[in-house]
Image (tube, rainbow, N blue to C red; front, top):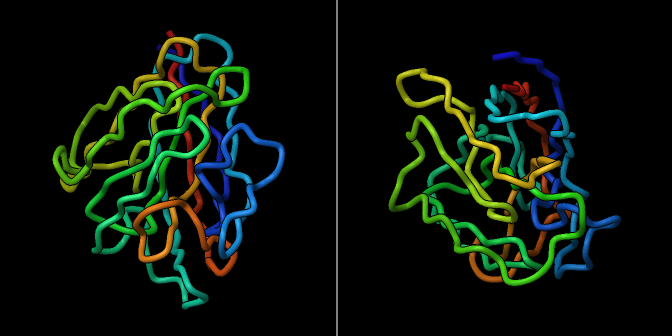
Length: 187
């Protein structure tokens, strides 16, 4: 197993649902910024993360760590990318894409209210938004994310919406950023 790492800054305005697009959508309250992209070409089999920093919504002082703050998120699918259901808000998320634009019917939404955020491994599908948080379990074990077949890119961002429910929106008043170390594991 070979590994390589890179460090990225994910702005609080980084819109996970703009993954693969060339400009952020014109959402109500602003479409924010394009999410941060990482190239996965070269037999990357899994990815792990370590994230720090603080973000917030609504122009408030950043106080939400990568795992987010307590409060439900239930954001709808957008443009072929699945929505997200989670027990927290303003958390670091990811989505894997192939080489083209996201398209077709979005995969099922992963309900992190049901599976929790303390998993050790996760195998999301292409175009399926997933929780990353700080990249470790509550006991400090690094979480591993299996790269789906056909994935050539990974995007990092945040899901935002009015009251964190319904259609994605209101990115332009978000504050702060996360610093994320991405570790790519190749076979």
